[in-house]
Length: 144
Image 1 (cartoon, rainbow, N blue to C red):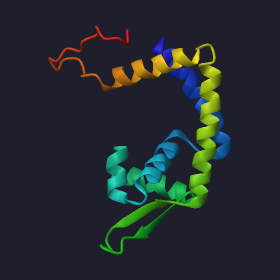
Image 2: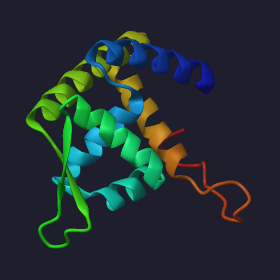
Image 3: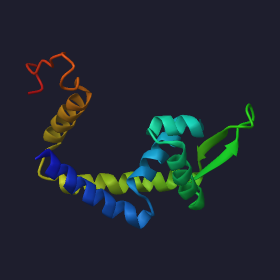
Image 4: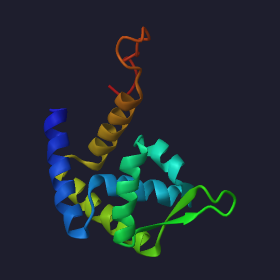
């Protein structure tokens, strides 16, 4: 069921991002840049768990579209600082609005309370200890 729901959300997300010229990896990078307020290219690669070659390709795409810009760090000229441009901030805002609409379509059968419970359970499942670590997760809490 989770795989089916994830597929439905992914398809709707891709459908609303494509007209904005964005792919999911662009959206994630723009979100990190907005939160970071200027981050080194190396730190961005670490945050996104991408290698140097792939981060360069991603940043080239974002710069070509005017959504992000790289500048030499004034403190260390060997490093690049990446920042979200005003156009990037606007595009991200539009993407988030479009994604919220897509999510509403996919999860429309749930009440607001049901959605809140789903989000809570998904966050909890995402933060649980992976299997095989020897640490059990107590499922006898109020969120079952």
